[in-house]
Length: 254
Image (cartoon, rainbow, N blue to C red; front, side, top):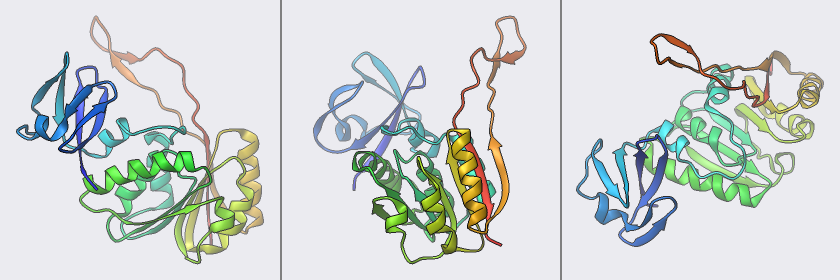
């Protein structure tokens, strides 16, 4: 498992690259030996690669998220923060996430539960899991504390382990079978979050949670509005649409 560096362009584009004593090609940057190029640099210093000046920065969670490898659509930081807060996830918890995808939420979870926690991920599509596990590998060498991690291949309703969970997060096309299997494994007071892109999925999650004797705590959509400085001074909303990510539902075992 190697070490990783974060290089940021002037326009904010972030590159997460492995530090190895070997000449390799890096997408968007070119061919070079990262160990040789970065060995004498300190955080905050600039380096010229091709015709680009990049700044070496510490590999913290926001940088790892910005520069993560991607295949499947990721759960954004906007939703990830609320999921962690509403589920009450913290250090030492046992947390199940299905599916893994590219691991956007997973990195937030790993940071939150720390070295005393246990993170269980499940993913039915191997091509998605490959990317998500790569991002977790990067994070494991960058975070000061990283949880025990167990990865399961397949639909979670078919592979759910014999554990009790503090929290469960479900991001999948059909939630009901997963809710039926996972709800009985929640600890008393434990919570479940469902990530549902459409209203019909949200309603199905609500019904399935009620059938599993969970108490619905909240369901809805989170909106995010960016502001910026104007040319003549002052602040105003940045022009652009309000993008929809997904609906969220939270329920508790009482």
